[in-house]
Length: 121
Image (cartoon, rainbow, N blue to C red; front, side, top):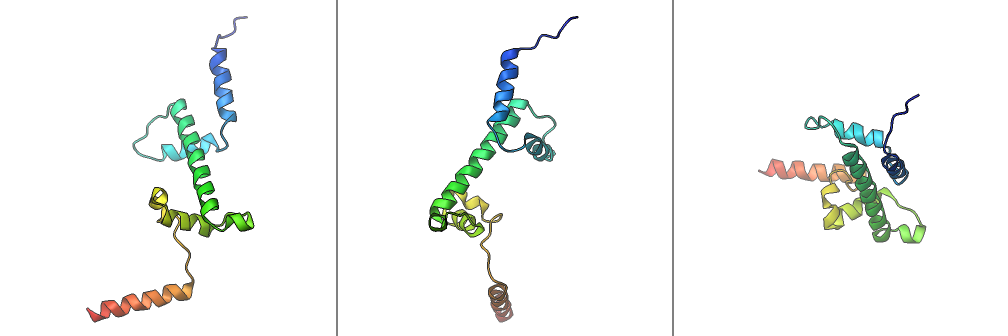
């Protein structure tokens, strides 16, 4: 019986890589393939993208925790993330994804003000 010879170092390396990430690789692959520009994805590129995403999320969470009210309550809230996105230049590109929450009455009031300004022109 002939067994296929694979590179055991590579197999060990691949399995150890999977242990170092928390995000599901299959989900990251699906997101990457949703781009019309992507036809195939190299396994190393997939791993690196997954790891980079995980590190970015950790960095955002830690910055939000340290900048927000998390220190007192030992929690991380949506408003902490939104404030960090708005106030930190590095995360400013996330302001559309993480907008600050406003109350409905405040939104309606600002909407009325905008309509009044448009009527004046």
